[in-house]
Image (cartoon, rainbow, N blue to C red; front, side):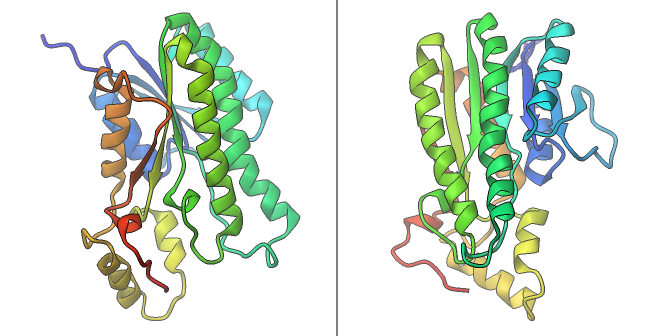
Length: 254
């Protein structure tokens, strides 16, 4: 019987029950990994074989250490970590409150820091590891009324490079995936009550050179490659997956 590419590897996916997180968990399990889908929200459907849910609040250190203690107690060693938990707040810095600012940084940046901090010792025991953070094309450019979100993604980009430098000598690779418009509930909330939503959605698709949004499966495919041995020399990189959107000279204005 042919061995699957990620067989005998343990993968931790934060935000594991969200739109992108669910697709990532399913793809990694399909490739043979034992997947821990960690999230504050329990899945509303039965999980496929090879995926196990664990309640996790990435902003709370004791919640993160409890998860890692559970993994270690079960004699499992994490070799793949995907920091997919994230939130978005649509406000300018003038309209947003300090609580808004602190909340989005707590999830998007501090959460990435905490989970990575406590997963690294488990990776070190295996002699290798791959950490995949989630940045955004909004960490390179900016969309209107997403000031705090853009700031968090710029921070994740810088953190990714620093982690890659620090832990490369331990054979632990660190990369970030930077999605553009991905067809998830988060994207649909962006359209909100915008009047003619269908026309707005088509306008967003048309501005992409590929004339479509990305899908969670598109993201999962890149995660799968970065998780595997074929990407063994890939580290410290920010992988933009946006259908060519940021390659254009001029962006749309909605």
